[in-house]
Length: 638
Image (cartoon, rainbow, N blue to C red):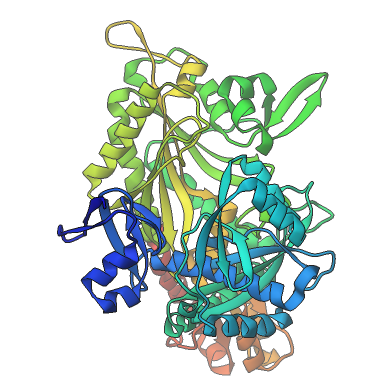
């Protein structure tokens, strides 16, 4: 019998018979560990506890407390949900796919009838609990693809048949639990009894394989955790997220809307929302000018030939819109970089002229599928705080660090923590291996020098270069992709950008693509949810509302409003014939930072009584004193 050597994380080695499983290894260490282990990692790959170990290698046992456990729990719970649905609805549904995702999992079902609604969740959860309590073994088996196609075909599971046919492999893996069988790579938990804490959260439509040409499926979203305490905390966070939903608050605060008559994914900004956006954009312009950027503007459409030169036509065409004018094809810009390169090429540049930093609040349009559109967070028309830094290769390090400092400063101003990732070359890319290596090393070096932690995100770079992605953490500790820094050796080559060096010869510059907030629309959506609509004073569309107690103060209120407006305070007057308490509550609901109450005493003394939206109050003060107070509170942002 062949003996293999299994190295454990502590460096110890177990000599076992070839064909033994991780369960046998766990059992050799202790019965308690054998009961607790739910999967293993063999030479870096996740495997089932029943996986046959045929060669020597490193083994790490996974328990419910391991970082990898949550994904396994959720993937196995997706199968449990599918089994429950099949038990309840039988031939009325077909199963398709059910992966684990961030914060949970989902499973897509096909049915000729609309059979799922939130009121069905309790019934499905009850069946899932029954199947979990039965503690069914979850077993893996290999099957010839031809046999699997025949089996699923006989079951009426045509989507599984299609998946297997498209795989084009000789054999596939299946997982069984009780009378339920599913096509799956695995791994999975050893048995259903380990699934103790799960909750169905929502139902939605989803096209099969994400294509609008395919059938509409019914998707059930759910989540699962290792214990009920963690599940309870997560559900509480979900409830808080509902309160913060920017789509709900956008309607309540009258910031923006979407209208099918205008088109899906196209934002209509209302006065308060447009003002909020303008305040953020004005802040951005000032911050960029401080840091040596030049403000530029490019056209909304450019000839299609330019998009072919840049590589967008071959690598990004499905996300673009095209139009034709005088028999000439144009692409509506999805990015701003082309016009910026044309500005650079408009005259000869010396090495002394570099870096050139071009900043544009550029509106772009991208063809997003309707199924992924989501309020302000995913739209078809949006504005980026886009900049392109064209520099010498020896300037890359300093410029990248400058952008990172810019991101750090702005994140601090808006009250966000953040984390960073280095995204490397994707499968679909342009440019030489050498240029990609130079660009990636340049970004990695800047990150290493910063001393800030970062992760590697393999294969998620832009098609023209690697990038540093900055993810903001909001008040609920959710991560949002906003800032990015991309290092590009390829487009300067394609557009023949050059500069005259100290030696009098032409040299090729490097281009850094970067955004700080990213999409203004997306950032505002994140901002609304981060603050629950309670914007800081400096960007609140309305900073104060002046309210009278009786009609006797109406004229004075109008005078106060005029004085404040002239002083640059964004103010409204509320002279409605309503009770004071009603006016104050409504102002609080509208998230207005200050209510300036005016009664007979304030009228007599020429003052206002400021009250903050959280209910706290300041001593009565003159209008000039309130102006000074607001200026003091907001001066760091101007």
